[in-house]
Amino acid sequence: MKQIETALPGVRLLFPPRFEDARGSFRPVFASRLHELTSHAWAEMNITETAPGCIRGLHYQRPHAQAKLITVVSGTIFDVVVDLRPGTNFGKHITVTLSADDASQPSQIYIPEGLAHGLATPHGPATIAYLVSQPWSPADEIVIAYNDPTLAIAWPFENPILSERDHRGISLAEMSPS
Image 1 (spheres, helix red, strand yellow):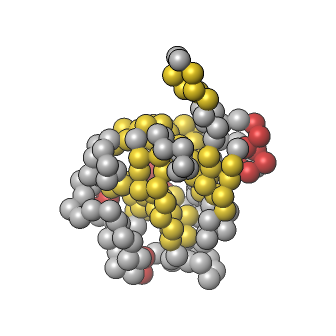
Image 2 (cartoon, helix red, strand yellow):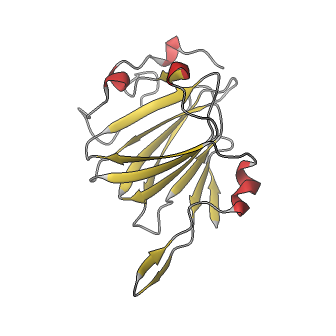
C-alpha cells in the first residue's frame, strides 16, 4: 500500500490498492499490515453519510484522545487535520482531498492521537468510515470552530450545513495544548 507522510508528524495519506473486474471492485480498508503504521487496537468503527455542502468538525476528544483511520467509501471529501499536541506544531493544519473514486487521490488518512479532524463535502454526498482507537465519549469531546480566524482554513465553500454542536465550536485561543 502506498503511503505518504504529511507536514504534520504521524499523519499519513494511504492509497489502498483497488482491484476491478466485470463484477465491480474490491478495496481493502484495514489489514493486519497496518499495525506497522498504527501499533494499536481499534475500539469502534463508525460510518457517516454526509450530504453535499456540509462541514463536520473540527472534532477532538480529551482526555481519551482518539487515533483515527478515515476511509472514504463513496464520493470525495475535503479533509482537515489540526495539530493540538503541545509543541511547535500546535495550531498548524493540513488539508487534503480524499476520494473513493479517483485513484490519483488517497482514499484514507491515518491521524494519531492529539489532532482534531474535520471534513467538508463540496462535490456531492460522501460516505466515510472511521476506525477509532477510543470509544466516542460525548463528555470528552471538544469542537474547535471550523471558521476560527486563527486557523484560517480555506474551506471549499461558504455557509455550510452544520450540526448544532459544530455551531457552538470554540476558538483555538480557548483551547490549550493537551
